[in-house]
Length: 314
Image (cartoon, rainbow, N blue to C red; front, side):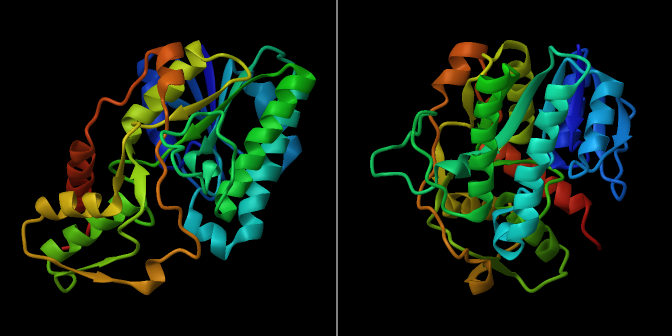
């Protein structure tokens, strides 16, 4: 099977390339001209998804069986600072991909549109675990653009009979993730403190929010299984199915530190709007593919901490 990963230079893209190649896929991946994919397991194509004609050219050249649409502005924090950029990439870019798919010479492509658990937003009391039928009520700009992406995907599925699967992926982390995300942020700070690059003081934001965290290696396995076994037109939650507080993440990371570290609240790390709890019902993906998370949160944190210990300056 031939796969095309749109947005393969990002954190998830590298793991997905390895997952697909290991499963026997012929892998192609795109990146921006300013990016680089250093992986011999795939063929690399330069692409800006805001250029629709270029998207069409890549799809016709590769003629994939399945497309994994990962290209996105995926940071909630950045979406507050750069709302226009977030909307352009996440909405206009997705429309360009779907239009190119609709017009492509190969008519039997499947696409996974990767959305976010943030789309559910401000859920009503008692809604957790959140099923895919829960009404969407986005609480931030990133989430709103991803909800729009999913709605557009449903329209293209119904109107044009395209083979589209919508995914709502909850928080995922692992070695190599940028430190704008919480587990990577905490682990990086610990690694820097251990090397005496900073005072032994951890800077944090909101610690009471409850989120569902899954290892990125489990997440890309879910994407592969959905490509192979998912039902066209369906939406799937991807997550562990068990939310924990950010405080729990912090305590676990600090328990692995090699020195004493104090904690200090940093107002600049607080979001303009934060949702108290997000936890998915993952029974649908388990029923259709047999997937469930296997890597423990503790292992994810340990591996991420070891990554930063090897990738911070002495």
